[in-house]
Length: 143
Ligand code: T46
Image 1: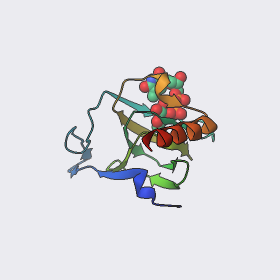
Image 2 (image 1 turned 120 degrees about the horizontal axis):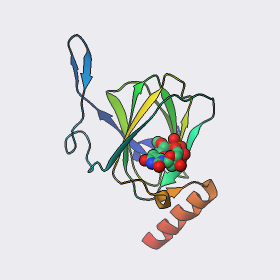
Image 3 (image 1 turned 90 degrees about the vertical axis):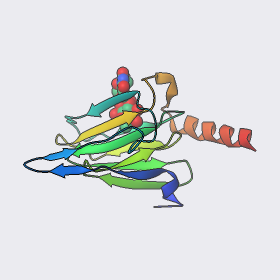
């Protein structure tokens, strides 16, 4: 880990009811602080290639690994860290303008994501140099 990686994400802990099964739930406004506009999940990853390799301009996301595991590489261009997700009850809140890559997903892995916005390709920054320029411009504008 380099820098204060906690700025890049925060953990979200979900309740689990255990009887003859495990029931995990999440509620908007309680466990998820943003309004959920979309959910999606990624499964059946059938090769060793990483996924992600982008940042979002505005979209906030909550990521949970329902099955298997995934390593999430996160960077804001200065600090970086890798978070290992392996439990449906422990996810992360990923803020906008954080470059993310999903590594080591397998056929077993099911990654569930709740997002604050509908799908919009214009919200993606898919080139790392463009990402660095975008955050530099945003910082210059703030000053
Ligand atoms: C993210 C990580 C964690 C849609 O049409 N609708 C959707 O809601 C999504 C999520 C994707 N798509 C399309 C866009 C691409 O043509 O599905 C295709 C694959 O998307 P992408 O290459 O962005 O997939 P990942 O696994 O690299 O990234 C996904 C999300 O797209 C992204 O927002 O943060 O999971």
